[in-house]
Amino acid sequence: MVFDDLRQFIEHAEGLGLCKTVEDTDWDLEIGAITELGLYVPEGPLLIFDKIKGYPAGYRVVTNFLNTPRLVALGFGLPPESKGLGQVQGWREKISEEFRPVPPVDVETGPVKENIHFGDDVDLFEFPVPKWHEHDGGRYIGTGHLVIQQDPDTGWVNVGTYRVQVHDKNTATIFMSPGKHGDEIRKKYWARGQSCPVAIVCGEDPLFWTMSHSGVPREVSEYDYVGWLRKKPIEVVRGEITNLPIPAGAEIVLEGEIVPPGTESRAEGPFGEWPGYYASGSRAEPAVKIKAVLHRNNPIILGAPPQLGPYDYYIGKNVMRAAIIWNDLDKNVPGVKGVWLPTEARGPNMIIVSIEQKYGGHAKQVASFLAGYYQSAFMLRFVIVVDDDIDPSNYADVLWALGTRCDPEKSIDILRECWATWLDPMLTPEKRAGRDLTHSVGIITACKPYSWKEQFPQAIKSSSGLLKSTREKWGKSVFGLS
Ligand SMILES: Cc1cc2nc3c(=O)[nH]c(=O)nc-3n(C[C@H](O)[C@H](O)[C@H](O)COP(=O)(O)O)c2cc1C
Image 1 (cartoon, helix red, strand yellow):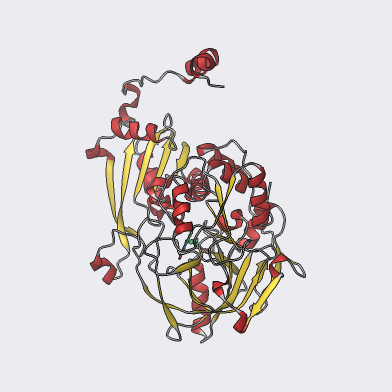
Image 2 (image 1 turned 180 degrees about the vertical axis):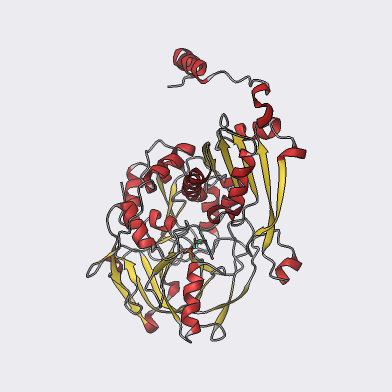
């Protein structure tokens, strides 16, 4: 099933009993803290905050929308009961066909134009924008959002997720890391002495949101990519002042321009970031002047604040990322049997790969490939390679391998001066001052040593055949298993 917009997705999730409406909360920390609490609840609900203090009923915030395998399955169109490596496999199948762009189609109008405000009528505080974390520098409307920009030279429309802070009724900031596509595009306008037109979509189909931060290649529009995934074009309307394409079913859209540096700026941050710290602190960022706001009746802000907890949105993102990495590994090395990015290690920081070892050096080859290649190298801290009898998404298995098949003296290597970011909490003050964005990567092979793996002691686990037949005969009567 594919969804045209956020409401369709929520409607289906409600139909499956996966949602919980919470009323009478405060945008100031309370929504953020309840969202965080939900990250510790296995199979916790998608949260719909309504009747938020100081705001009309119907002006909602939705969080925890891709935090469980059930929600990921719904949002990504995977089998309802799938989880773990099964979801990674499912996503691999979805992207196995050759990519063919499916461009968006323009429609005359859409629900996003039910309300339009210009000039003095623009008020970003019209919406219950949460302050998510205790030490955030302000309220962030953009966490589960899309930032849309168009390359002035080529016409390429890029869609990214770059956090958006609200400063006053018509001023925001966007934090774009150097080198991200959005940063590249805005600099092209600035080089011409112009402001960069931008549309910020706060509330869209979760699949589209996930694709906006999942490494769609440069010069490929996320619109075309999501159209291909959905097998139908996204319907768009044109922005009122930017003429940028906007999903017709979007909840809230802020249209404006990012002024050139030195013209007008605001102190952006601190903000609770995905590695789990407020590492990039606060600094001056160019102002984003909002000139028009479009929104549906009873609009919904989609919120995805980075928070710590085992059931956060990285479950969905990591499924996709693992599938992409697995496909690319398959094109370069043989024998890969599973790829997993543990949410608890903060998404891309750790990658676990299981392989059927085929030759000496095979495990190290896999690890060193990952340490250098675009989809995996960014902020990578550890690669762990295990044998194919280990499920990389099963931490008991992985720890068993680490505890019994790893001789630290021979099994650990360190690559120095690899690709880091300002968000890295381990960047020393000296490195920050010197703009030295690097850290090391640990490569751990927790595999039976290839040269004598046939003599490696046999594991005591029962064979899968014996366990299966035992479960069929005894599972129900002894343990109540179905
Ligand atoms: C919730 C969330 C917030 C993010 N915030 C930022 C941000 O503030 N700045 C940034 O550069 N990247 C941020 N990212 C990562 C980018 O979205 C990601 O690198 C994406 O690939 C950028 O798009 P691009 O490749 O088209 O530049 C965020 C990702 C998520 C999931």
